[in-house]
Image 1 (cartoon, rainbow, N blue to C red):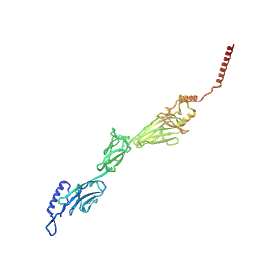
Image 2: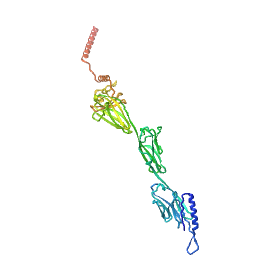
Image 3: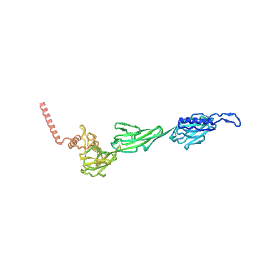
Image 4: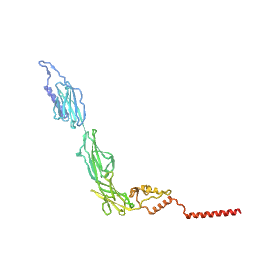
Length: 446
């Protein structure tokens, strides 16, 4: 018996080939006869007993199609990839050179097509065909899903941009189905779009940063997902370069002799600036028992808090101090003048007085809570001989105020007995009153 299998790349070709094969089969075939006789034996044609199920599988997994038939007899079953116009197997034989393809059967009743390590190109229609006179076929569809993957070669990497420029971040992702891409900031800050819109997330493969500022600096996450786990992301760091800037909260600072005082400057710079202090003559201040400088990195990291502590202030320490910040983009500085002031004190309340011991506690503990010392411009001042500290704005206090404060304290805190002169005056008045009473009684009795 002559058999052939029909494979076509499209419907028209398939119909033509099926017609051609049928004509050949009809031309050369004849009924099967028994030996030595003239009676014909009719062979029942095979047919499918079940449909081929469609399969969805993730790339990299194994898959198996089943084609169930009955009455196969001497007919053959073949598997084909319809989209690729490729014959994969015929009966027990593998025709394709693809090593991932194999075929098995269950006593010729069910024929299995095995595809190992499925790839995205394996997707499409798979045809099971029986080589009857009129070829019998049925199809099953293989849908291959592929987890998202970000193509680094087509996506942005870490960038450095000057403040005020424009920057476009790109993230290209592949997968099946086609992944969607969204952007968000690593620290969950808002994303600024065109300086007019702020959003938590942005959809699309590109992110436009217009007139970028230091507030836009940080890490951005490109996240690709298509419903097939796992979701993938790429971290892109955006660095914004700008020259240093300085803020000085107090340009005039007063402090008494023998005290300690801390001068402050706040800087912003990227890349990080070199920060240091100088005197008015330009000499750099170095770490010593007299000076202690520290730079505290803030948040964001381009912010720095500069602090210079001057211990045991002497007359030569008064004058101008300069905080300096420089980086490859520029340099800036600011000045602070330290002047002498009287030791801070407190004024007594109108209706109450403080005992000397209480005043001593206030001085030692720095418990200055009135409006003069509790204002927002206060600085931390350390008492050098006792190591204590209090909050003060170090404004110079008028000496007459100090004097009046001390006088009122002394009057309210100590009771003074009358002097000896006052005592003798009192006795004289007592004697005069007594003599007057005696004369009055004498005149009355007469």
